[in-house]
Image 1 (tube, rainbow, N blue to C red):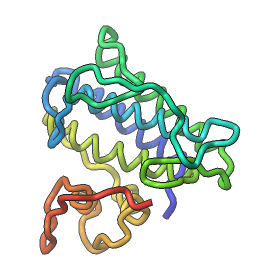
Image 2 (cartoon, rainbow, N blue to C red; image 1 turned 180 degrees about the horizontal axis):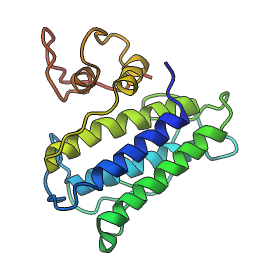
Image 3 (cartoon, rainbow, N blue to C red; image 1 turned 90 degrees about the vertical axis):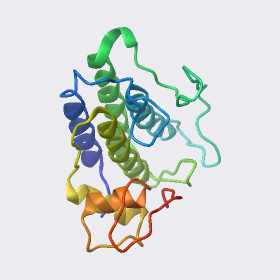
Length: 203
């Protein structure tokens, strides 16, 4: 049930292709339940991909702290990021940033020894763990963007199933996979279950 570099690559491709169909949307609209705009949330997706890849980069990765990049907010209430897209490059530029950061993550996951461990705020992870948390973050934040921009986003069931198995092993297994992942991350309802109000990636 592990999540691979190929899964990460497929997730990035699907993300870029889907967002590319929303050219006429209002990218300054609020992204679902977040305080961020849709543009900022996609920057956050790119930032996650880059930042997770970077943790695996040093010859001897740290297991007690992240690589100390400086981060910034472009506005009060916006996400704190290392990676920003040049607004002058428009949507195509934003998607190129996502694509490039995704490629960096995929390359790091493919080439890092499975014995290597590095720090993440949720715990110490192997390369597979960074791939998994990057995929999970991308899937759920794409939901936020889809709500804000008004398009449909339903990722593959098998990918949702593996994210659930990796991070939410107590989640029900006989329910719709995407609906269950949204429920587990506090973004939706699931019949017969209380709404989730607090959650984390259980690494």
